[in-house]
Image (tube, rainbow, N blue to C red; front, side, top):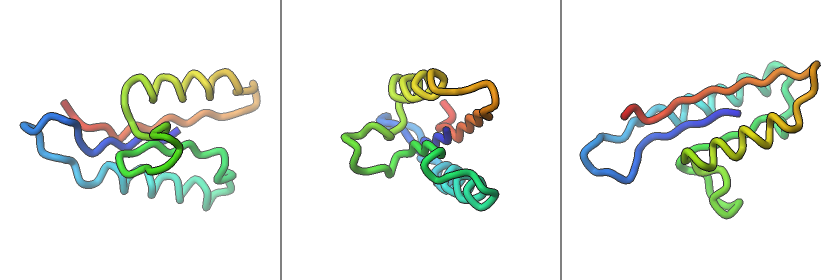
Length: 87
């Protein structure tokens, strides 16, 4: 589960331009080492489709994490990487 959040709705904070690229690059690295693409859950501000399911927000991130944890087996490895907007 890789989450990149480059900004928020408030205007007093500058967007962080590299967080989305960070998680996209990490996803590519995982896939290059043999992780199945379907096993990589990628959430970031530029995701479209999926009715906004993979847009990062606290509630959505927690919901996806719970879903992942429900399906994990003892032999599985779970990687959670956050490249969040720093508040």
